[in-house]
Length: 125
Image (cartoon, rainbow, N blue to C red; front, top):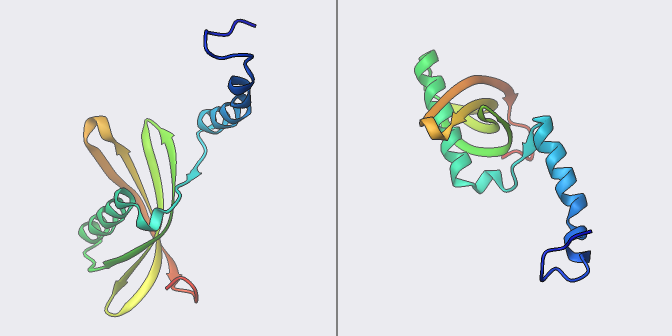
């Protein structure tokens, strides 16, 4: 096996092969990947606020964004984000699932779905 200068016997390089294989399979499959620390990720919070605002415009509602619970992403022609969030209206908070499609290179962002999951359960507050 040819190794570029400086890689010694190749053990360091080969240690990364299983990691790269697993990541490649996930990426190629187009599956959703959990976003760590989504509840504090500024970009995910901004997408959640966008989702609530778009829903309000489309449906004539007055939901107020409260917080992000979790999020996943999927690489497609752009990135699909599925965000579980809390929003409230008239003092009643509920959990919602929003899907937002983003194509950064086109400055494109679209709310593709927004569904109420139900009232908050204990532990989601």
